[in-house]
Image (cartoon, one colour):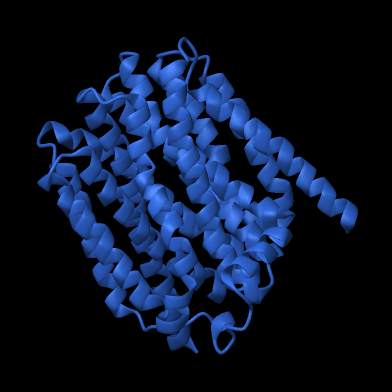
Length: 391
């Protein structure tokens, strides 16, 4: 029994480390490439469009992820995803071209989704119900921690433009090697149970049951991509230093790190349906206040930190909420849909942010984020009220 518990704990923490390094690479990549393209005079619309490569890759591979996971298990999918990610990162310095970098981001999106879908499903399928919120909070915490550290490595480009890519690639490779210490396993809900219909049928059933839970991944995707890919462009154009921008992005993630575990535990106690609308509303207000802070780095950092405390956990809370609402046989599909909705939000963020910077002047970039979460807050209240009426 103790040996089994130890093996499960070791597996959990290895998966957590893998996710943190994945967060690091994403956190570094978005502001780094945006800053490089901005310095090279590439338009903000094209800059934002290029940033969507990561999420287009995720969407392209999503319908095909369940079959290999069912057939080969978690470990081979994680190994393949890791190879794609660190190989792509190490290829960035070879040729600086908008199209080539877009293709590499596309590949990283495919590899990252393989990592996240496998690790996420492994954790949600094996966690006890009373510890689900805590375990997913730690999972989200590890990603946020990596994501917070990532932007701090972007200024390494001043030493050599290719150095941040090389450092990130080597760190990803180091974490990837830990997978070989794990014993392969298969999702229980899939063992001998493939007659649940097509991917589209399972998706429709899951969305009908748990659509309200997917607001979290969608909102976090929009927030993460727009904040990390397009806010640096806005800030640099308004005379802010790259080091200050990196600190602001990092402080947002730190806010999420501090609140991740407490919010996860609170949601276990009081329910995700109560905690999530509060986080959406608080985040909307915090970003609205941040939009009035101008170029004051200290006050922007303070308000963005508060926004991070509210919104830094909505992805992991959304996953936990989905797990609460979804039957076991649809749980892998639910995890896959979390990734899809995150990607849709992530695609929308840079595109909307790029258009905002191109055509709107004299208005803070934070306002677009505040408006989005105001809308999400209202929708979440409507969804909770509908479920309450049905019950």
